Image (cartoon, rainbow, N blue to C red; front, top):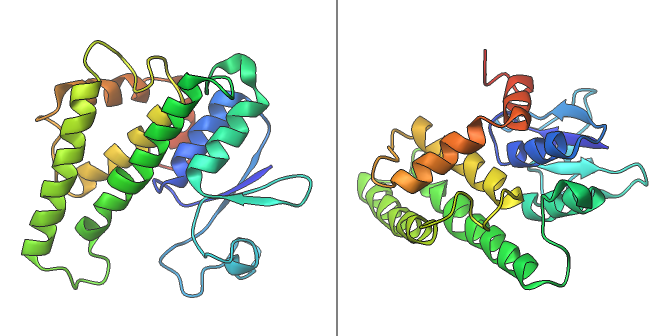
Length: 205
């Protein structure tokens, strides 16, 4: 398998899950700021993922999977003994899917206006986006009562949330308002797989 990634982007969640799974894989970095976006050997990245963003996971059979939530579940299902996802067909698996969809649509997407890559978002737009995102984090904080991880035990959802939470520091937003979320992030950060993925991406010294 080969993971096409950008350091610290949502592809890092997939990278963490690959490390957790203990499966062999290769990495190829994509510069999202380049135009056009190219692979290490000079190919247009759109020939691999026509959507032109990371993550993309190339499988030995020739299929390329995209979208972090889908890739993480696929990888986790390859190693059921690791417990990274609940068994398919269970209520717990449906609850995991609920978390993954929530993170993708409300947390991950919710940070978009805060980045303001094109410099076109007003201060008011950013304030409203942060207010909406804060409400979503309030919900996560409430649901973390009495548990260490989102779905009860550590899962791919925690890797995804951890990755998204990491962006908030770059955006100068604190997690102090949400002590349970802050504790979850610290807990996940200590995992060897997380340390390995972040080191490989040049995010840790």
